[in-house]
Image (cartoon, rainbow, N blue to C red; front, side):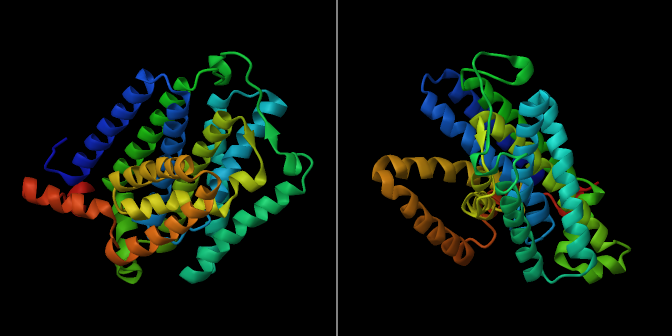
Length: 335
């Protein structure tokens, strides 16, 4: 790896950032701080997953919470009803969410829905799933699913302390970041970038835009589902309104947009910063924090769209170019 290569530099800096968070959490005696770090890491992992399809693929996948929620319920059901370990459920949930991604992509892309209708369709799927689970006895209806943890059990990913969850969350985030890195250096990443920039030109080069987009949604959705499975294990309780919340959905995705959805480091830094900000505001303003946070979210979204259309990482990339003289080119990154 070379620091002069923009992709390599991002991976190295992100790994160092994750290591610093791990060190902070392991050495801290505050359960509250560790709780914030875990949730911030989960937000960053979702944002990094979404950026594969929503960033590199340029897809308006606004209902990404569907994959997250399906993953959360997959772990909840498999653990509480069948006693299957969450270590396996994380992978199973990824597979179930990937299947959902395939179904969504097959319907929307093969029928050539416009970007606006595609975005609305994905949001509609998330809310349809919420209503379905709210009215299903098997999934606990509005009561949701409780995961009881009474003692440490590594096999069942059950810990009284919060620290092991932080290390698992950071490992999951690092794995997603590395997958994103490998994609951007691969031929698949080149095809995704080509389709995002000009679908017709990509097709003229022999690239199948529909197939490429479907693959991106499957990968991103599968990773999002795995994160959702871990989230359900961490919080030990899920219900449809919680894991299919549109407010949570946009909170997670805003981190990717604010940080830079076309980069590796952007979604991680953006999402990891926004979650602690929410808790800081809640500590300062108490019960009024939630309403204030929504106002702040809207303001951040408008400001980022107007002044940071490429995200904060664009300016980091500009600094990197001045520091090392060049930025890794797309073609170089896919060799």
